[in-house]
Image 1 (cartoon, helix red, strand yellow):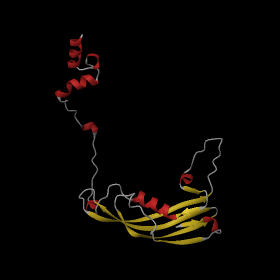
Image 2 (image 1 turned 45 degrees about the horizontal axis):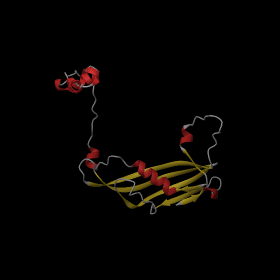
Image 3 (image 1 turned 90 degrees about the vertical axis):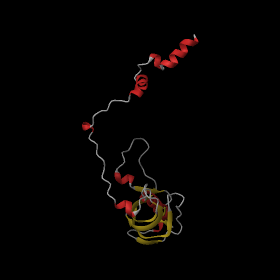
Length: 187
């Protein structure tokens, strides 16, 4: 679904019923998308800017990273992006410090908004990298906190003493005793 932003008049808005039939992201994510992807997006024109706002719902069949059981991960994703027709004018002669608003604004050189691309990006970035089924999601995992001041240093295993000497530069010429003896025998 592509929208030509040049056709919008001042203060106009359009309701976009999104069915996601054209989005295919199964090869980009771990899991299988249950189609259709549904949602309602509203495109507002505010001055020279366009705001795409709304919520989409997507269901992805995934396998739990802990137990390996399949489950359906249902996501309700809030979309709120701002678009401007043209290119940013930062000047060519000097460095410009970008504000948060600059980083949240997308520039469309040709004025064509590809809604499917926006939705696809939101879905991909909203999925957790470690899929957990509802059983394992509910388990509270308390963080492990280490107080390094209370840990006593244990003596090193004596079998590592030669390696420690090498690392600290204590061996002859940086090589082991065996190599040194072998080299002496060759002379």
